[in-house]
Image (cartoon, rainbow, N blue to C red):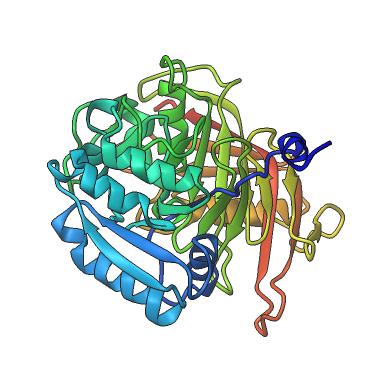
Amino acid sequence: MNFIAFLLVLPAVAIAQHLVLIGGNLKDDNVGIWTAMVEKAGGPGVADIGVIVASSTANAEGIKAADNFVQKYGAKSASIISLTTADVSSQEVANRVQSFTGIFFADDSMESNTIDILRPSGVDTLVLQAIKNVVTNGGMVAGNSAIMGDSVAILGGDSMNALVLGTKFEKAFPGNPSSPLVYSKTGGLGFLKHYVLDSHFSERGREMRLIRTTLDSKDLPDIGTSKGLGVDENTALLISNPLSKPIGKVITDAVSVSGVFIVDVSTVPVESGPKATYDQIPFSFFTVNDTIDLTTGEVIYASWKIPIAGEEWFENAIPSADIFSSEQPSQWRQTNRRLIDCKEVNVTCTSIASAFPVVQVFFDRLQAVGFGADIPNDPAKTYVASFRNMLASIKPIES
């Protein structure tokens, strides 16, 4: 066999591709996430990162991010790319964008214009195609998780509105807490398939808004899916090979109980209205260093975590008085953290708001599997818990 023929039969070398789904409110000193972005964009002294800004409100955030990449985390360079509706059809801008080894979306708000500018009416612009080529060619793309999927993109609303009103499709009213739950039927930027995505997740009590959105949109042609994924603040899901076989690893701050929430509503009947009942919604929550196959659902827990079953710490679970609260952070997360680590099977939580009907939420851990441990090298011995296959049932109380 001559040398040329030998080359022809060699297997193709896989090019690593990386997507970083950030849950919002990323802190400058979150070493794990910033370091991962630089490493996946080529590493210190090599990474050349384009910082995308698509609204005037994100200029300061973009400048700060660019400085962070270079001055604190060793990227070779980071440049601001301010986009307008005219820029996204420019071949010159597309060529510049495609030359970067990594892309970071600076906008951290669903009121930003990122989707409208880069993918108007659900059609990729020239510049968005170039950004996707960065991933295809082995680079890194990072940004707020809520805008990164190909399924519907949530534009506004909270969990109580989702529970009572269901979903609507008109534009949200920025800054109005009573806005209806709204989403875009044309989807997000399209970097991760088969998941409805959300951000600022536990901290703003967004569990029900993700569940409701996924229920209402799962049968849409082309972009409908039964799976939802929410990322907590100052947390990221680092996804390898997002275009073929996505494998996600949870990254948090050095000491954090935050994580990633995953739900599948494929077995949940669709109902609407304030008296709708939702039975046995299966959901999971994964914390630092857990790895999830987003295609098969297989999970590899961090090597330092151990099974919780038989080693439970608490005698009782503690129900929340406001499980869907956006004012009291992380009620759903805290309640289930305690439940998976106690000797009870069920806990009932009552969500009460004077303007809405009273709702009971039942969590069932009978089929759940939990892993947990103290975070290594943490003098305070902060305990983190991960679990899969918890069940939630949500039922209105008749007045």
